[in-house]
Structure formats: structure tokens, C-alpha cells
Figure 1 (spheres, rainbow, N blue to C red):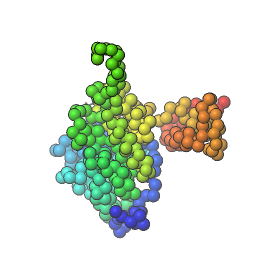
Figure 2 (tube, helix red, strand yellow):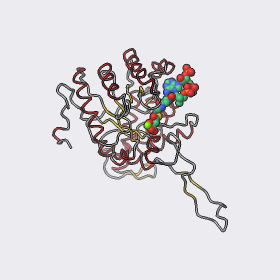
Figure 3 (tube, rainbow, N blue to C red):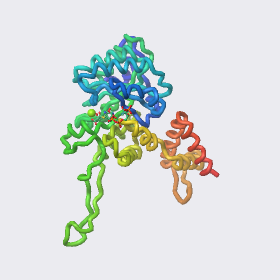
Figure 4 (cartoon, rainbow, N blue to C red):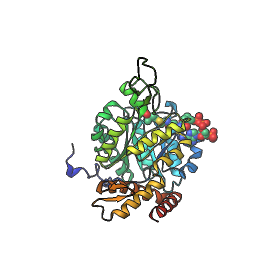
Amino acid sequence: MRSPKDFFAPLAVGAPEPVREIPALPSRMIHFFDPSNEKMAAKVPDIAKKVDVLLGNLEDAVRADRKEAARNGLVTIAKATDFGGTQLWTRVNSLDSPWVLDDLVTLVTEIGDKLDVIMVPKVEGAQDIHYVDRLLAQLEARAGLTKPLLVHAILETASGVANVEEIAGASPRMQGISLGPADLAASRRMKTTRVGGGHPGYLVRTDPTGEDLNAGRTTYQQDLWHYTVARMVDACAMHGILPYYGPFGDIRDVVACEDQFRNAFLLGCVGAWSLHPVQIDIAKKVFSPAPADVAWARRVIAEMGDGTGAVMIDGKMQDDASYKQCRVVAELADALAERDPELAKAYDEATKEALA
Ligand SMILES: CC(C)(COP(=O)(O)OP(=O)(O)OC[C@H]1O[C@@H](n2cnc3c(N)ncnc32)[C@H](O)[C@@H]1OP(=O)(O)O)[C@@H](O)C(=O)NCCC(=O)NCCSC(=O)C[C@](C)(O)C(=O)O
Ligand SMILES: [Mg+2]
């Protein structure tokens, strides 16, 4: 382990100073596209206006014979596009693959000044982040970059989950972690064949009501991902980085997608991935707090004054702890409102009504 004194020292001569805090930029949806797919690439300038994060994917879902085309396509798109306030991320190939070294060398050298975050798949432990950390510092120094690239890990192996706390704290570059439910299911030998989402077989049942064990018993489907998401959220919060739900592969089932995203939002995640344009608005809706909730949070903050003591608002007790929860919601709303004028208006109107 590095000495705490050295933690914020650059890992290569001439590399930029590591950041001390991860910026809490809006990242409700990380929109995936394949830069080697001409149809998708053509949509990038338009999609960039609608999403918080655009991610050029080089790993799984890009065919082996398209890996170089995807890497070069991302370089071309990044150089040609003005992304405005939208962040540009990439997901590089896994660290044991034949492509990742060229991914990192090419992307940092060619478009390191345009990229915000590098997503690293199949992270097993802190050692994977340490490898990327040093290599990025060397490449940043050589490219003369002045802003450090941040790193995002995908939690998609059993060992990654077991080591999630050390991964979250492995480097000042760590920006966040996403759940990777498909690879994680395979790694754990779960008996599912889906990309995220629930499973009708994973349930609990009410007690029998009589002799007939099948009669009158309600079943409730449970969330397969609750344990992992909750662990990931704690690890991220502990290290001041951001947790995300990952992909929801049943593109047609926009209803269950919204449910899964909302569970993650309520548990503490700041965003999810959109794999298809139809999932962009779902993530936007779910990961932007509802105007009524924002209005309530702002009202509690206003009525709590310095945030100490206990007061009653509409029959509900408020104290320091509920005040802190309200601040989480209100601060998120403020950050989103800065990026989204429509949302800003909806939040202000609801607040005016609540305070009237
Ligand atoms: C699902 C697919 C095949 C359906 O693609 P489609 O063409 O069949 O769908 P469509 O409904 O017919 O598409 C309509 C239009 O939208 C376009 N389009 C469609 N998607 C996008 C997009 N993302 N961005 C921009 N444009 C898109 C598409 O090209 C088409 O354009 P057109 O009207 O001009 O013909 C397609 O959406 C796709 O390939 N999406 C990305 C998939 C991906 O990135 N997967 C990897 C992330 S999940 C993962 O890796 C797991 C994880 C974490 O690692 C782990 O759990 O282990
Ligand atoms: Mg995966």
C-alpha cells in the first residue's frame, strides 16, 4: 500500500497532479455506443446534446474484428465533435486482452484532452487499478496533459465484489464503480442468462393458508442485485466516489428497466447505463429527483434553520439526520438544474408552491 503522504503525488514525472475530490457532475445516464458502427456514430452529435455522459465502447459488444475500427472511430469522433457540457468516457478492453495496451496508448495520446473518464472492465482488485494508474500517468506526461484522466471500475467478477472497498480507494483517480451484472452472474456461476434485471424464480412466498400448499399464497419477486448494489454504494460513499447501476439488457421492457433503475437510485446510485436511445429518457426521469421531493427537501432545509434540533413539519418529525437527507436531494437538484433549464423551472415552481 502507498503511504498516505504519497497518495496524491503524480505517478510519473511530468504527469498532472491527481484530483483531491471527484467532481459530482451530473451523470444520470452513461450512454454506450460502438464507435465502429457507422449508424450509431452518425447519431453521436445529436445524442451528445441529450445525455450527461457519452461512452465510446471498445470492449464486449464490439466484435473482435472491429476492435481497431472502434478505437480509431472513437479518436475520429472525439476530434471532430464539440461535446459541450457532456462528458466523454470510454470503456477499454479488459486488462488481459490483446487490445487494451493499444487502447490506452492511442486514446490518451490522441484524445487524452477530450476524455474525462476511462472505464476499466472486470476489475478484480486494487492491483488492476494500480497498473492502470501508473500507465496513465506515464502516458499523460508524454502527451503533456494538464488534467488527470479519471478511472471507473466495473464490478463484474466475484473477486471484484469481494475486494470492492480496496478497489474504490485504490487511487485518487477513482471516479466511480458500475455494476456489471452479466459478467458478474457468469463469474459467480449464477444460473441466469440475462443482462441485469430481475428473475421470476428469485422469490419469497407467504405461508400456507391450509392443507393445499398451492392455495392462496402470494409470491414476491426479490431483487437479485440488491446485495451487490448496496455493497458497491457503501464502498463508493466511503471513498467519496460515485456508484452506478449498469446495463438493463431487455431493451423492450422499458417498465422493468425503470423499476431497476429506481431501486438503484433509491439505494444511492447516481446513474445507470443507456444501451439504446430509448433508455436515455428513463434514466433521466429516474435519476433526477421528482419536483415534489425537491420542494419538500428545500422546505425542510428552510424550516430547519441551522439544521439542529427537532421540528414538526406536516406531522413528520425532522431533525439533523432528515435535514442531511434533504440536503442530499436538494444539492443533487441544484447540480442537475444547472445543466437542465427545464428541470430547474420544474423544481422552482414546485418549491414556490410548497413554501407558499
Ligand atoms: C442492443 C442493440 C444491439 C440494438 O440495436 P438495434 O439496431 O437492433 O436497435 P434498433 O431499435 O433497431 O435501433 C434503432 C436505431 O437506433 C440506433 N441505435 C441503437 N442503439 C444505439 C446506441 N446505443 N447509440 C446510438 N444509436 C443507437 C440504431 O443504429 C438504429 O439506427 P437507425 O434508425 O439509423 O437504423 C444496440 O442498441 C446496441 O448495440 N447497443 C449497445 C450495446 C452495448 O454497448 N453493450 C455493451 C454494454 S452492456 C455490457 O457490456 C454488460 C456488462 C456490463 O459488461 C456486464 O454486465 O458484464
Ligand atoms: Mg461485462
